[in-house]
Length: 171
Image 1 (cartoon, rainbow, N blue to C red):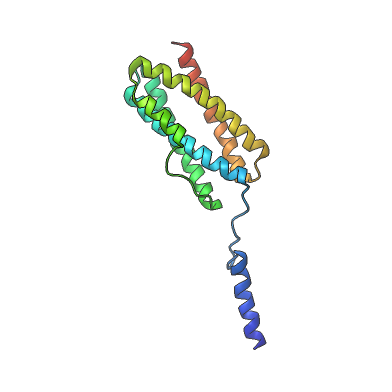
Image 2: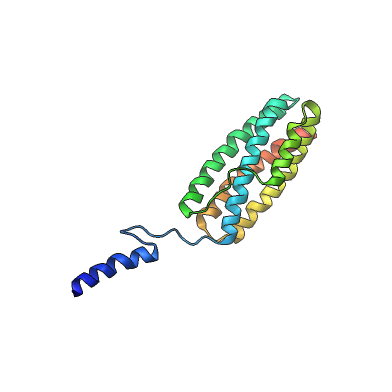
């Protein structure tokens, strides 16, 4: 009877604590880390969709090329982010925020030079904000994996900002 009780306790306690035969439960993820993952994912989705619109509707080849680059880079960044979110048990939304969707609709309604000016101006502002968002996560986030995502994304976002700033100054 005692042996049976010991076996039962040995089986039940790890299950109740989230640990099973050699597998640790996902580490705790702060609300800030979760918000970062959700926000960064939505930013990536918006950049991918905006880049696709730029590829179709931009007037200048440089803007179409920037759109294609954004699609490629943000798809790659988002693939990494989704892997970390899954590992940490963070659910991600399936589309950009309502505000981002409204901005995408505005882009979709424009074409040529009008599109170029609107999209490039928005990209300069958005990428500056994104750098601040990444810096905040790197300096005050709690999950090393999420902080690494933010740290790894910074050079890509900086490159995008430099690209759109140079396009803007060339107008």
